[in-house]
Amino acid sequence: MLRELDEAARALVAPRVVLFDWHATLVDTLDAMYHAVDDVLPQLPELGLMDALISHEAAKTPEDARLVAYVREYQQLHPKIKAERRISRTDIFEVLFGDDEDAKHAAHDAFNAAYRNHYGEVQPLEGGELDLLIEMHAFEVRLGILTNRDREFFEREFALVDDGAWLDLFETTVCGDDSGRRKPNPDPILKALANLGEKPAPNCWYVGDSTTDVIAAKRAGITSVFFNGTGWDHAWINKIFPGTAAHPYQPDAIVDDFTEFKWLVEECLEVGHDWPLPTQ
Image (cartoon, rainbow, N blue to C red; front, side, top):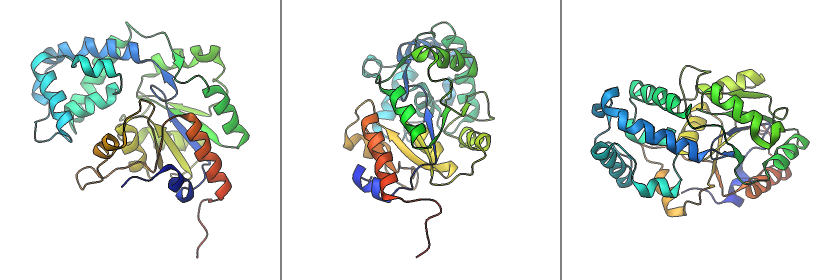
């Protein structure tokens, strides 16, 4: 059972480091992302990736199985998925190809080539992110960004958002082409922490909007905060984080917006849990 927010605040270690996902957590680049995915999926046959699509039995949920079946038949996303704008390209590729790292690498490469034709506009996701980031500095929390987006694209988006006001607020940024493997592998998180001279621990938080982000955080041994900015209901969240032997990873906390995230940080600081926790 996933924790309620107040229970999470009592249980979590206060953050010394907060790493944020980029797309659909801090910023909105959904239009360009979906345009690029639209360009990639019809290329699956020529990329040799049709046989790499996972089987119906291997899908985590019935909804995932239907997504794969639709892509297998039509080489595109169902219009409802695009209309809802709730799933990232990384999660799309995770659903389609499962643990096949070679297939996902080829899909990400094709996405990058397509994204080059669409990216350029970027806006804060909610509008109050700059104030939040400044407040994190007042709390003496170190900040970083992790993204599966290649640095070629991220650097331009990073410089554009709020006219470059974010550039000096983050001590490290790690992009999809900066480490050997992309999320959900823990490598980007471990690289960001190494850049900061920090070791993985519960006082390092990763905030992201996807199952991929949660898996990466838990594999890295840090605290996972799931950013539910798209408004999934509790039944669906429990379905995508079932806590089973096959899919064990669950977030340590869930926030629906940055107002809740700020409250969570403040409550954790108020409770005063630090790391390492004192022995009893």
